[in-house]
Image 1 (tube, rainbow, N blue to C red):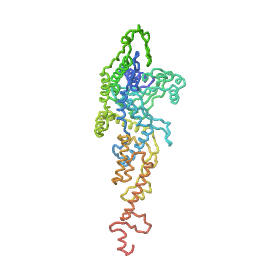
Image 2: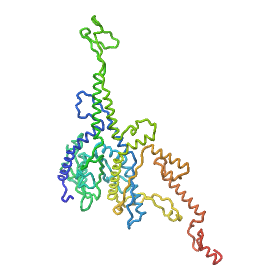
Image 3: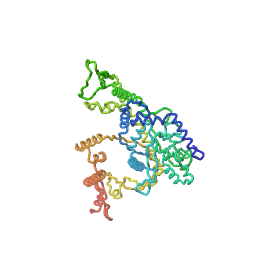
Image 4: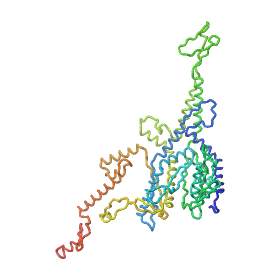
Length: 566
């Protein structure tokens, strides 16, 4: 707990301490090296001395294969109530969960979470850790009076500093620091909005102490803004503080959030360290070996692969290499004038070692020929089985990714609870006319209505989160549609079931069609009930005796027995 007032000096001292820890871990140089190898700059900083510098980047193919295998699924978040309370019924809890699910879908779509997930996993594979930072932007238009929405960004692992570097769990950290590199004008604009005096605004100047990016080309225009977050022990909420090295940009404030707005996922865990091991870190020596063998082979080919001619200069002053040109000599035997030297042969073991290094590396990383699709499809079932077997080790990394996205969903709930307030949302319910005309034992289709919803109710209702994942590959959608077509044509399912299960985009205005079909089904059930004598008629006029269908000794029968007339 931070008991005294936070100052720029205290925040920066903790930031410098975190930078020292990362420097001892060689984090910044490792990330820079991994990024260079991944994008193909694999001879960066190497003195070639005339040696060719070829790049055969099989490392990138292996990494992208694993990233695509893990993050090639559609993602959706589903909230469900943990349990009913004395204040709310189960139906109310389910309606709240339905509202949250629609909000999740909107946030996922606006932030392009599926795309961000691929970037998240790419950073984890190349740099060692994937990280996201979530905040509430009050200036985003929402189409209603309540403005602002939730924004999620990908941040590099070099821009996240944990208070306890031996613990990779986010929510147990004493504090978290996020250094942001921004234009000086933007930092001054933020400070001015927070009421910083003009003299302090002039003290916000560019700095060159950016440990996180050695390729910073705008050091004379950028400065480091420290975002300092910590959890107050008394209130249990997250407090924030922003500053540069010398100027307080935003004073300490209680965000009212209960969770750090950060998700963190190492690709492979390292004991007692919050930074993980990158996927490509173990592949770099193999990539260097292959590049060097190719470079030496190319040099050998360029210098010795072509035949050379040795001639007697005492008899031929100059050799003419033109095609078909005649060369004259001053007498003597022409057999001793010149000789062609056969080129030197490169050992075939060189190419064998290159192929072995690439194949072994790909196989050990699960990117076998069958997984990459480089085999002949003679037996498709066997190929699919081999692909699934090679992808099995990646399930552990995929489960870690799902856990991170579920953590992101909890952060979204936390932000909606604090920042959303009262907003109009779509809720499924029956109209008054439907409630009055709904037949006994039958359910009419509910309709979507815009109604105000106070998100502060999330303080009272605990919700659990579940991540639903579905294949996003095009062939999977085609297979799904073909299966549904066959079931519909064989009469195994109804048209409503078909429309509810078909993927998005295949039928325009699908929900309207579903509602119309359900309405027709409900009317058909009502007509069937009327035929069977089970329909409740309209409200009788004063003085009339209601006539109810069905068996039993009703009011009409009693009146007939007593008076002889109805």
